[in-house]
Length: 351
Image 1 (cartoon, rainbow, N blue to C red):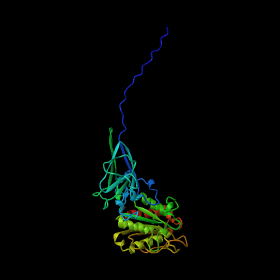
Image 2: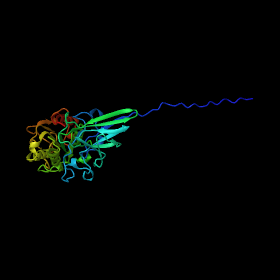
Image 3: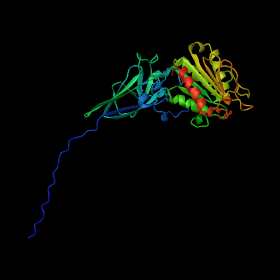
Image 4: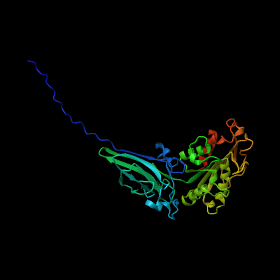
């Protein structure tokens, strides 16, 4: 008789119960600013606790929606989409809470529809942080945001430290340079502005036609709001071609305004092959009130070009080994020109 093979009875073994450990990560962005695609500019992990180049935040005491109420007091429908809030992405596995002090408010949206209180359990993947304090941040007046996460497997945390902006940087393009096209490598002035934005400055870019002969216009409004309502104390202005001439006009406009001039210092200005605004003559005037002025120009082109400015740090690139071939249309694209302006502005202007 043939014996059938014995079938093994499967044994069920209980595996050790495993849990996903708690994880916590915050990712802050550079400020929401017109023309810049801020979602492309995350603050690097290594910079999140740095009070100089880390996440900057504006004091939200202006009135962007012009309803007669300081924006930090607005919420819900009256707030609109507030560009002074900073986006922070939240990655958490476990039960998440945020901890922060009275300098900050945290919202689930840029329109401030729902507030998250310190210590609240929440599930949002993105939060919007607002600075509501009246004084600049410092070691003794911090504005930190801490994510705490816990589950049965343990705890985790992450933190970012915000610093309030003490300066505003205005960059003014030349003829045909539309700030809406920032990112185009042929728009060198806006490339310089982007580098400064990426390095933690509060940078705003404008077309030359956004500056009136009197110095008024959109750029003036930005500086005025920054100084009067956001407590900014340092201003920097840079411009190329007609934007250089507009730099002179804006500097003059903010200096003659008695309600402004005693409240800020024009720490830095720069011309790149500056031309008198809406003319073809070289801009040879020093911006009124400037503490330091870089004037970078070429003498290769015979008609449209900059020239020496008395009282400035003058660089005629035509007389250099690195810039002798540069003309008016490409001088602002040159990496050496860019490094001069970025380096000198950074050394003189506190973020």
